[in-house]
Image 1 (cartoon, rainbow, N blue to C red):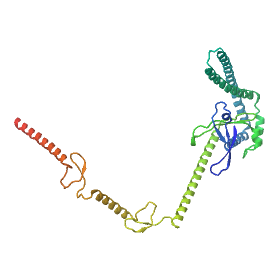
Image 2: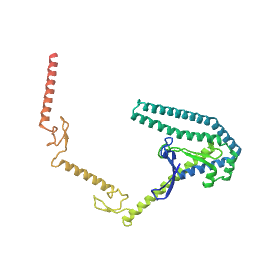
Image 3: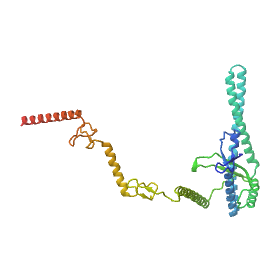
Length: 356
């Protein structure tokens, strides 16, 4: 990890964070992930405090669990790492053979220069990546073989730094071997990031949480959520107080400015900023007057209200109380329909008389 320094946008204070060194050196196709230095210190401190509690509670049970976890790792991980190392070395040798054959084909004229350069770059990049991975994996395999488990020494260090309140430089140097930070997953409140802490003499301490510890963690999370909510409410209350003070200053010392009722012209003190009329009666009378003015403006010089034509269904202004059709065309159409209906009715009556 690479230590970086930057300033906060709010107050300009200096903050420290760690950025992935593998991304900067283009190793293992890492992404540009990182973590704040305070977050690393908090995670390390909580881990050391938990280990300290486990040691103080039952040292023998803690040592036995560490021994069991270490044996499980020694059974599977070295064999897997060695198998992966052999596969990488085999692929590296295959690439060397391909590069040799590619060069011979280029010299003999069987391969064009453009394709030769393209393939050579591809093989060369893959070999560089394999070299970095092989070197890293060899170091891990050698590290797992060379570093024996020393639980007694680790417990003595935990007793030395039992129940710490902060991460000191001495504690960090004597306890921590390395810290691996993985890329964060998710966004917002669902964002999580895995951080692996490797201690000196024992490696990772991945002891499962007990039910009591899980209940305690849940209670702490609920307490933190309640404190966060309380802080948010305090901030909102402070913002409301500032807005209220600003409004009082703008209104000349009054919380709400007096208004004049647009209907009756009476001055009144509103109960809210949205109140327009002095009373419900003025509000009702103003709405009626507004509707009446809208109807009069819409009607203009017409005496009767708009109606719907019985033929075409359009709205029209009638000239008399009995007018139901909007135009001469609709009147003719209505007359034709009525006449046709009358003719059919007479024909039906005539046929009925003849049958009788």
